[in-house]
Length: 316
Ligand code: MN
Image (cartoon, rainbow, N blue to C red; front, side):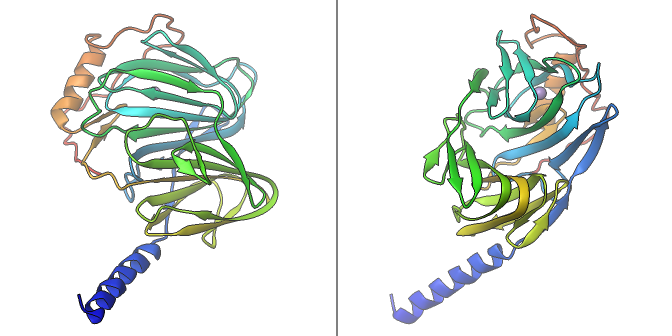
């Protein structure tokens, strides 16, 4: 190959990387108020962005101090085709599922539930009137894994590293020279950066991954963009590193992954590939067939909304 030819390839590759690197989308989250005080900000999916790698759902709940008699109570509901990933920052939640697991999750811990072919679970504050700050994510399972047996794993300890004044917890994948134990099925990364005072760090990224960041608390500067809770910053693909800064206490969630190359359909609590699969799962749940019951049923069972004539569109 001639030098000129190589240079052309290099330069077109560089342009490609640069054009991808210039991607910086500020995506507003949709806020739902639960009770009097709890704000839940949905960052994924939105009309603008459906996924970041296999991350296909992101709810940021709180921080909130519940009033006496108030708490989080999500009654029994099913999932298929995905993993639910709970990262707890403040408070205490008890998870119960149809495999028989009853697990309390505390700050700094992760609950990872693989729905696969189907599971039912509930999530409740361990006691009312406490504080809550949490993030719940879903991870779409690839076609080869999405019918797998359901599973549940609690991770009480995750790798922690300090970088430029941030305490970084590796939630998923490999970052900062450490690998999280979390069992996932596509190349993914998730890191929580927490600073109690001013901090600044340059974090190495995987240019093959796409990334997005969310400020969970305080005010942060990410790739020079000022970000407060309520906006997802989509960072695109092709970046080698990312600058994170804060002038006082702040917390940032950084997510990334290899772009998911399968079209998915996400409806209610299900991830599938066809409308028929969603209709079947909805029918099974609402008619109490197929899904196993939850033995210790603490709260009211949720009902799946009717699809009626709704036409679901695939997305990735
Ligand atoms: Mn759930």
